[in-house]
Image 1 (spheres, rainbow over the protein chains, first blue to last red):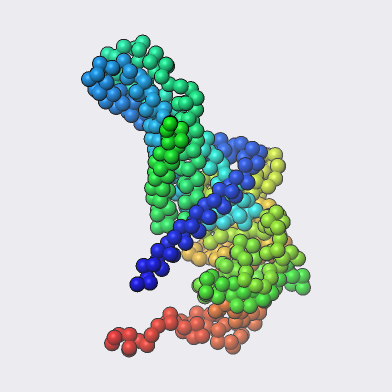
Image 2 (cartoon, chains in turn red, purple):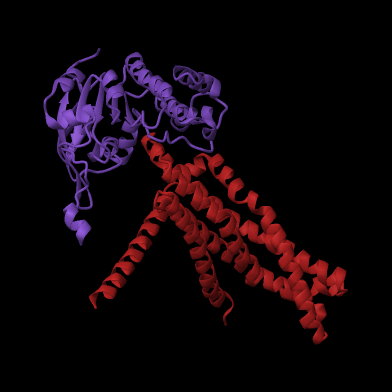
Length: 259
Length: 267
């Protein structure tokens, strides 16, 4: 009788303890900011690893998502004779939702999981411990540059995704299906608002960048230092990131676009 | 052999526990400056834990660890890091940074802690690599090294900042006889040539005894024997005898505690 209750209690205590550790971890990682300002090379190297190496994946995915949007949008809009609005539909869905959200999900699969596995393995092979004994703070040397590389890369990648996605929609809609090019672009220009749409999109992708990278580096750092522990941490990193991104997207959308 | 009364590491009344399991139960230990001190004992007696306590990576439940006159666990973070620059540690796995090659691994502490020009870093790194016989392996990645080579690179890295002491965590485990011999010789030579103080944690009795000035034998959270290698070989303490002679059963039982055999089978 008491057993399930006890287990529930233990599980919730563990969850709260982990949340506490995650917050302490973030606070400690932020103390490394002066270090990356002093040695920008550390940050640039990590931006290459998590950002630049994700470009191909993000660009191709953006292209395909944009092409599908063009195709589906055309099918629906042409029923109402409104295919000239295709540009608005493609751009609005990419800028407001798909750009930040899909990029964040892809980013967590491509770069987040790699970060978790890398840091987890560094822990398992005593590299972090070794750094500590060499009087090098692994928090500042390893964690902070990776955290900020992820946070700064996300909006750039989401921007790229959106940009290429719009051209994917243009390719299918205008070049293949014959939507009028002038109305495709001019309606888009008229309907998309810089502050309302673009700025909010950047805010969203920044928020997702924080969420995904924070989860990724924390799960790696908090991993049980064994093969199984690292594999579990990597899975958790991707799963938690997906939940956190989709959940916070709803909240952010409600705050930004809900009247 | 250097044998002064100058004590570099002084441990008093050290108590440490993992959860409910007591790893150390009141340990006193003196590590003399300039000597090679071995800490031996069966696996699972917390020898590695002891090194982490000396390095300030773990905190004891009670007792003190003084290194060069500083109480390690009362130092501020900054002071602890300054002290660690003068302590080298060789991990069992080597703990090389897998994304850097051999040269960069040895250069790592120099780049992190000094502003030396590149040409001087190069000379220093080559000198350290020469000392461990791996100057020719500078461009290899850690994954291309054998276990023994990885440990020698880690040793070159540990002496990069010219520390006052080096702690070796199980340096001989899993080594073939040749690399074992190389490591044994290196530890003694480096200690004497560089004026270091070495602490060697190991359970390879013969190898460790051959290069140590003083040996502590740990078991069950206590020091069960200490002395020079000769004194220990002559010791009649059953603990020391079992360990030095490698007997399967003795004060350290062969069996993990279990219910009575017959009853367990017939249940």
